[in-house]
Image (tube, rainbow, N blue to C red):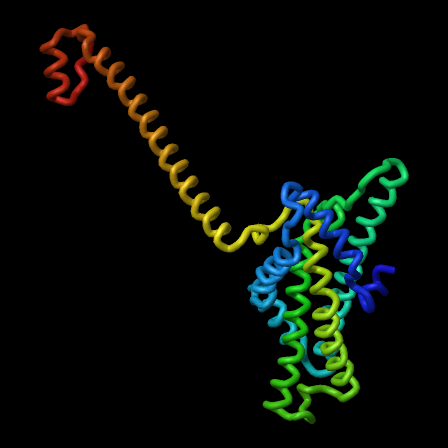
Length: 277
């Protein structure tokens, strides 16, 4: 059911209302008029900056792809199915999270009467980490964009009939799958991600306005700086106290009379040699 739903009704109005209510009741109970849509948009914009970036492991994947792409293997065709399968898996998982939340509410309603809302939790996500979904979407969009860019680069540089381009029966499915991935991800997966990932245990920093975020960051930096200065002062005072106690002990030791007398000890110190007893 979750697999099929991502194609025709990824986020319904009732889904949005219930998930919004669950988020506000969990994280913003004192502010029932909290603008959830604005917060969700800010969070998606912040995550989108990560999605359009390029990480080192993505470049490693590109190098491996180019090394495997030799005549007869058709690696450029088979590798197209990786983002395709991952996209369907991510969409299914996000829809399943909504279904799980609704199922939890239905189970509580059997035993408890009264107002019941969904309870956001990281337990509904893979390895209890919602950020894994963002990582997979990042990889899917990068790989899909690379596939399209590689096709047009070969087309311009070597032509449609080149050996690098491959056979027509491999080219057409690649283009169809790439376009399908781009449309499905924009139409279904990204809106699903924007709302469902807010159903984790914690909220994101975008819950605050930009000015509030800047103020909190500045306040945290000042507090960290004060804490560091306080630790340095405590450490220096501790060291000075240790040195003072050592000085007192050395003073006491130096005041003890030498068994050989003052002259022998003075000669011993000046000559730097030990005097036999």
